[in-house]
Length: 425
Image 1 (cartoon, rainbow, N blue to C red):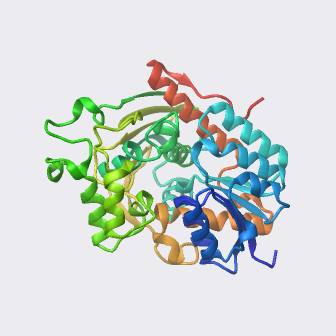
Image 2: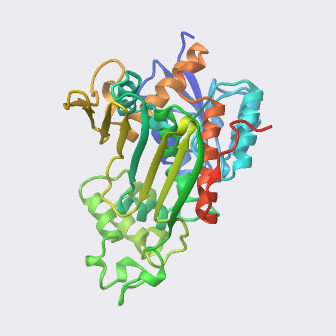
Image 3: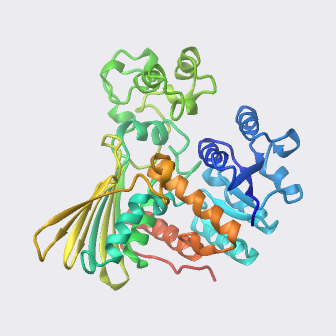
């Protein structure tokens, strides 16, 4: 294809807007021609940014799907519980498809979506953006070179961050499993998929432990109010909403997470949101139910093992990973990897590339360059018709989702759970 790849977006929230920015920044590679978004402010802002005329700015994905096919590909970034309908319908309409993770809130719906997309014969990518990070390429490259011999076990930490957890998983859209999805699927599906990619083998069995231990009413300090703006102990609270949102606003940072709580990012607008909206609630007086810490133990084909820890009780840091092999081990921080050699006793430090043809100016973009890497790969796949640019096909994407569902069953039942087969029958 000599012309840029054309896109339609279903969902113009934070994720959709971010993907749109990459496309807008690469006009020789792609162009957004249509958007579907029920919220007027977000729909109109997105349409202005991409010069989309009113007749292609739809109020729902159903309106988009009812129109004649308008673009080469569609990006589905609706809420977690609303991926299946637009994804299946748009694939049936011939759109190549990129879908935000998780695919769906139930294992059955994930399988149905993957089957439908496979039957439609369109190119398909799940937004498991961590696979596309320059850091991931570095780690995977060292392992594929045999730098540490055969991988035997992995220890992986996701430090969600105390304020990020409070924003998204206590006060925010992903706070409840019945309206979004459980924590491991909503947030850490990235990590389970990343471990599958790094180890290079299917996950066969899982166990898991975790709970919502801190962010509920029984932990509310004496004298605390149910809203931060009227709370006498707010200045001493680690989860103060005014400190987070007004503090960022005063630094001139009006994007995420400030832009999530209100369309009016003036100080008056933010104060009004903290007074009246969900993001001003005390973290001990919300209706959240997702866990605030969880551990997953995994066994891969061939006996390789891994442990994964998700916790709210950290600074907002990058992932930390240690990979143990028969000839050495890797210690990764997201910015660099230290490789230890058992034969020489020496350690070498490998920095994540920040320049070059494979990285460029997008290295510091969302998810450590993963968002940019995904868009680059998917656009290349659509432009060339070559699915190999996409790092996980439908079967493997479903496989990693199945591992997440199995881990949650293990947590709830206190059992070791097998991971289901990769494709529905």
